[in-house]
Image (cartoon, rainbow, N blue to C red; front, side, top):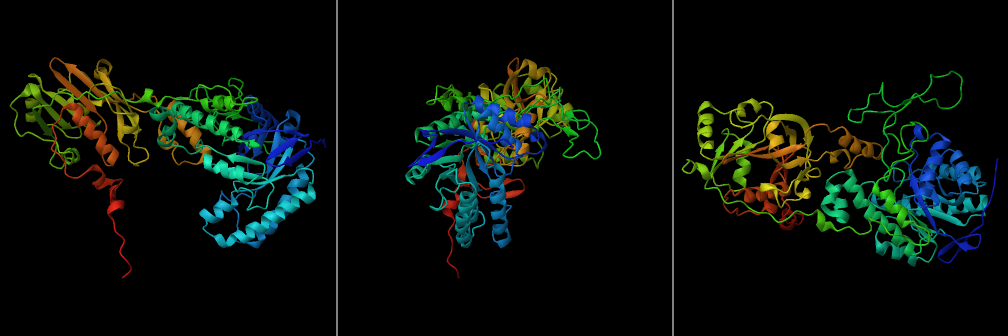
Length: 609
């Protein structure tokens, strides 16, 4: 076995390599199985690390194949070698003596396996045990055992590898003073000041909302742009990660990183898939290997599917080694030699993405509702206080609001056509395939529907929608039901004005989904969205305007209620003043009665008895 050495020392709050201060800038990632079972994957990962001006890696909480250390030796990558003592996956039986004893033997064998690799600069003996004990299990009585374990693990490392003073526990500070190095997770500037104040060499093993941040959360950094697409979300994360890394370096971190480059700052690659607009076919798409050979040791994969990796270590010659998001470019700038360099994502003017001021239309003199006696739409409009007329006296200044699920009678159709000829406007709300033909005679041009289920929409700053933002039409974190099941297409759409589009990105493929599927699921929702996206369209013929929308389920939250209120105001639809504020309304959402926002201020807890 090859071997080598470097001299790492700790002095005060600084780590030294061969007598000189040496700042490490790294990455970390879980082991994801078959795609990573090749030296070429390690080479690809470490090449990307160097490409972002970094020099270190933490193979996260799982024991990687030893060839990763070989490749790190060859490429000069510094490795923070981490054990499998990882509580945040919910795996370890922390209340069992068997676990604690097994962890000692595991650590000893781990150190003995890798201590001759020059690439290893330190040992991470556990990951997030303390926060899980205190804040997940809520078992503070387990902490004495954890403190004893930190002492035991520290001593095992020192006994078997006295050459490396860096011994840390990722996300656990300095192990309540037991360990020689401080490593924190996440936090803010105050957290970093705390870690600096401990007075030891310190670093950050995980930072950023890259792995969980929803558009609503990422909007903190780039505003309305975060809701538009995965690219928009990534531009916001680029801003966040640039400043996180720059601040870590400026505050003297010996090890700086965000979580992470390998999985979140690079695009999932469509290995072996030519047509990305279709769902992957397990029999046709992907990289297929040779037939199984009996008696040959090791894993013999049959297939590596599209989107299962962000690196292409030679699997598909038609694809690049990796394909970066803006987050990667920002990290490269933040990690620049000497100090962080300029980045296009360092400063983002959020105002450039905000809607202009609305221009409400002149009020209609009369609004007529057409729908069934039990129309859900009627209840929605009544809740907004819409003033409905019972007879028509001024067709040129009136609006029909039509429940798109309703089948018009012959008399209703005749009356509508007569008043449209005199200049009446029409709003068909919630058009469906079942009623599409019903409105052929009413609409001046053909309309068709595509199947497209979405709960996030992007306004075009025109007509009734002007002044509303992307965030006003983002309902993915509020409801499980689809806000719209269809989109609009056809001649009327092509020749009319689109006011609102469905977002191609289905954010429900990202929000609160498992790490192994969320990145691929999100980009696939964009790639495979071949349907038309308009969901609200305006078309004018002569003196009449026709408004057609497919949105039906979006008003059952305070946000949706308020968004509809703005649309009604912009449209010039007169409403009675509602005595109850929107934050005091009880909404029926996803078949559950949802308490109003104001309830928390008004509910009183009675004393027992």
